[in-house]
Image 1 (tube, rainbow, N blue to C red):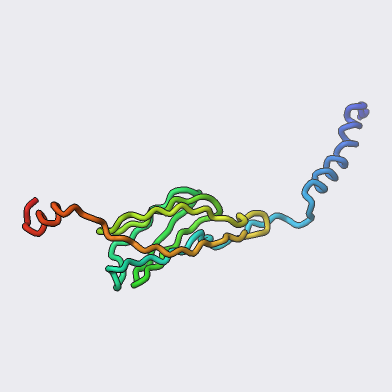
Image 2 (cartoon, rainbow, N blue to C red; image 1 turned 90 degrees about the horizontal axis):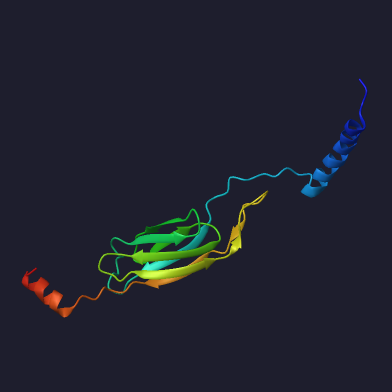
Length: 147
């Protein structure tokens, strides 16, 4: 079988392409994505002056950075954790009988990637919940049992 000039050119380019692709990687180590623990974007310490035993029904609502979630552990000073990576979060802390508190968080750090789990600069914040104010007329009607 006779080789054509075009076929010889293709054969000559193969080693060059292989060399270029290896040099482009910048490393001879394979890229490994580790099973990293879920990062903690923020830790909130939540309390209220009128609830020394803790706030009943404390809840978080989280919008923002992808794959974020959170939960609270009830206590005299409840600990709430917001999970997720770097990015912007809007966290609403709410409970029955209290004003909802909105927190706007910008979480910095290094996201996970090739051969690294990354590092998140976890924010530690204190939140003091304020009782919801009900109009005096509503309080009087409630006390009298009138709807």
